[in-house]
Amino acid sequence: MTRKQEVRQALVDSGVTAVLRDIPEEKMVDVAGAVHEGGVRALELTADATRCSEQVAAVDRELADTDAIVGVGTVMDPAAARNAIEAGAEFILGPHLDADIIEVCNRAGVLCIPGVMTPTEAADAMAAGADMLKLFPASTVGPGHIGAIQGPLGDVPIMPTGGVSTDNVADYFDAGATAVGAGSALVDYEAIENDDMDAVRESAAAFVEAVDAARE
Image (cartoon, rainbow, N blue to C red; front, top):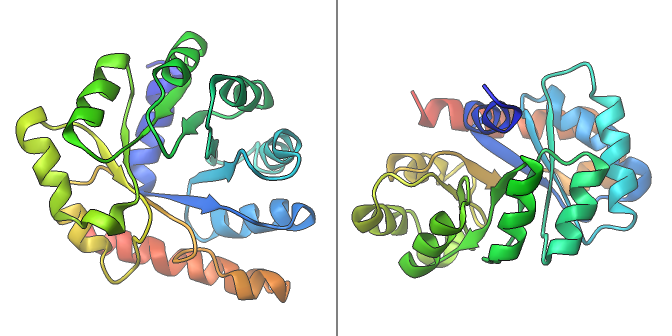
């Protein structure tokens, strides 16, 4: 099994990728550690964060002896993809479809998950070599949109992100989601502001519990 295949399996096994957006730089390592302790294997830092490459490297070092998989999202162009990969990102996500980003990832042997909304975008992404598809923003179309895409295109792997919560995550898995992405519904920002990493861990654990229950 290639490293890309291992990463893909880890994302599927985790069931949820935690989107660590707008985390203060000085707290990122602690937050990532707490979320991982809560049971989330897949951690997504965002390319628009200050000194993103340094943060990816720092989280990688902190969680090097664990089963954590660290990736970068909000990747808007090929240069950002290359920077993230050089920093150690093991998967790349974008809010949109850019075939050049997919090409960069494939050349580097790194998992690529572009953002799509329509069947045309989904088909184009898979034809370009995407490994999974990020349905974004999922709240705009809801769980039923997964089946609407998979109906004509087959069992394409879809990760809905944006508006997925403990209240509706079961609906997304029932509709055919391979995994989900979650930000504020999983990451307790008030707890982060108060330096309460126990609460951060508990919030992540509650989301993982909801995912596990949804997939039973």
